[in-house]
Length: 125
Image 1 (cartoon, rainbow, N blue to C red):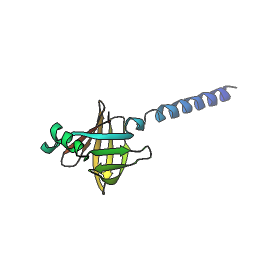
Image 2 (cartoon, one colour):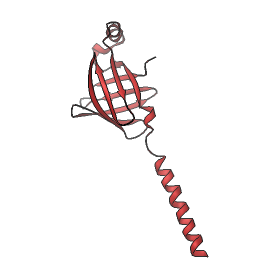
Image 3 (cartoon, one colour):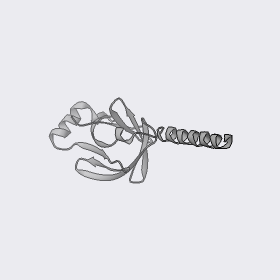
Image 4 (tube, rainbow, N blue to C red):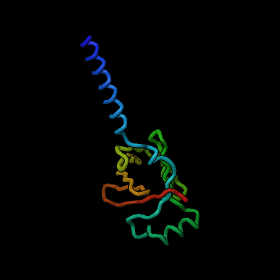
């Protein structure tokens, strides 16, 4: 009887461990959907410039799909991207073979390339 009880206890512990590990993954829903460029590290990406681009129909949009695919639409020229979340605040994005970091903080999604140039996106209103 004690062997059966020990086996049941071991199985229960294994199930609890599996559920705990699954819960540690990144919540992709924090990332997925449409994002609109809000600002960037380039001096030409200030509020006035972005408002002017928007008024001319030249918005920069980022779409992240749940399956890890997406698009970066630069002024009407959509580029296919791949992305992956490594946590609820960090991930990576790949465009034309180049990889950059994704940082998600306080409702803003920032792409940081290897030269530390940034583009920060917010959900469209």
